[in-house]
Image (tube, rainbow, N blue to C red; front, side):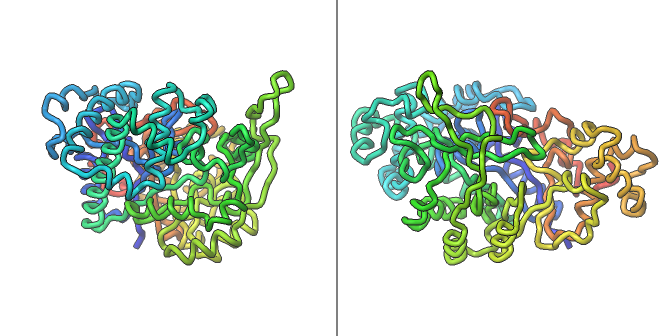
Length: 505
């Protein structure tokens, strides 16, 4: 029997406040999963987002996104009143209106935090999480003062973190700092309550941890010695990937690369703390861009001849492969954490070393079904049972969009149609008489194929479960803006679908 799961980020849940949150809709979705025999709920990173609203480019590698706090739970907990709820209302739509959400929730969270602080010893919370909390609180305070998250624009005395800087900022801006700390305490409380409920129902929560950190993040600002930065703090080399299925020019992410030797010297403490923190509220953690723990694509930043200033390149094509320190990192991972806690996001250019470290450490990899038809008609029943198979991820087009964009003579289209023709009994309930029928039902077709695969674990994005088109895509890799906005307006359509391979709709 398969272990089934659905991929739906918290921000994509329906709510009356412009963005999905950790409140009633999250519990309703969990109930739906339980009632229909699912085992997993997979989400994206929950960290506070920065530029472009991307959960993979956050302001902090630890601090939770306060905009996922539920106003309804704030009201239930007596932290706001009915009028506050009404003032935060936004029309329901299929896209998150981030600017409106930030404006309204900032006011709401400030009041809720003030009330929260009157009943809790927040200083103890700050000190118990001081490793990341103090740099985060100092950083976001400075970002507000400068009106910019680019710490290179800060005055010299503000370009590096110190405990003395935190204390100095606290003397002048204590209220804002305490409100931000209060919001973090509230977010943690709401998240842990949801996690407890999910586990009590027999569900497991799968999350995601980005390998790289945003250049404009409190961790990079506070730990510059761990990253490939020059004495001024400018990036020397940045992360990305070479040309791949998503982009002919590769993907230039712009994240600063780690100084792996420095990371190793202190026992990879930044990674260890990140993993421990995430596994406090997740049952399983997907290691995003797993190949980067073994080898990584390094793209140099070159000086502008006219100004002498280091600039980001135009694309990732000028990069080269560099070796990380997997022989040091993975034994540490194995000693400190159970292998069952991780899923390796082993997509991209796999070589022998990457596969070897994945398999030696017993880390299950991933199969994306959309990619399986380009070379041939796949033998899906022979897929390894330990792999997690996905119809697509947050980076993929929805299945409807994917198939609609395939040229008539494309290998993927031809091979999928050949698979359907060779396995008529597998699709007997779908009424597939011709190619048009396959196109209209491609989301069900692919879900059936995933269920028929040899993989024990099957995860389907909710967009594919519902057969949604390109308007429901979550992210287009290589584009900085306009992503991470899709959300459900309600559960009406979802609650009519019992399983990924339902054929009676």
